[in-house]
Length: 335
Ligand SMILES: [Zn+2]
Ligand SMILES: [Zn+2]
Image (tube, rainbow, N blue to C red; front, side, top):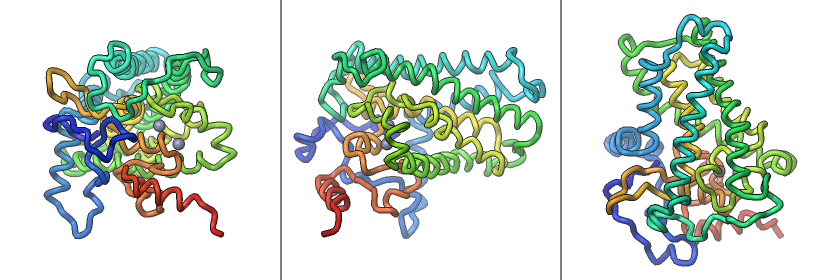
């Protein structure tokens, strides 16, 4: 998420005892909403997030290659058939195994970069515990990601493809609407951020939390397989971002981008590291420090940085000790 390809790893004193590594604090957020507006800063931020070596840029390229070349929407997708839906399931399964499985092996299997750029120095628990399905955190996470997250995300993609093929989703072409086509990529991530806040905040309501969202929070110290380890009801809600295309003219590339940003971006963003580090350089930004704060402190950062509802509604945690103190004060019942 954050580009660190040119930043050396640091371990500032304020991190001691809390974090092994953290980005510059306080977390400054996304410059879309700064006032007065700073167009140049916004452009720089867009460039570093969408067009540099980050997970987001990789999913953008993947969406474009599929939508225009390898797997476009075709007229036959107007009706359901295993001939084409099976390929989508297989492709999403491979993509998820490569991203979540690959990052898990790099960071935790081979321990390829040790604690470099790792947020929480505590190791991911490896011991058996009753709270996990099959006894172990990684197995539990893999089960919910592959048995529920993968088919439900795929079902949303299939629905979207049927809607495009039948003309229910209004399709735009880059040749005729180039500006709208480009603008839609940051816009759909903004929408995803807003949608995530609303769904996620609702899931923290005690009855829903207990029966649904607690499953995701089995991960106090998350890893790549934690990203979409959720209850099936949460999966249905989480991927319902696709519904926006019923009202917003778009291209299938936008739909695929938002889908991958969720299906694959959650695993990379939960990896617990800021970036893949190799040969003394950050090679690929994957960090999700904003959401790592949610897993650590729980009652904060329900959304993501793109749409600042946390700031506006008083649940923003900027990573500093003062923010933790503010959160504790907010939680205290009035005397
Ligand atoms: Zn939560
Ligand atoms: Zn999470």
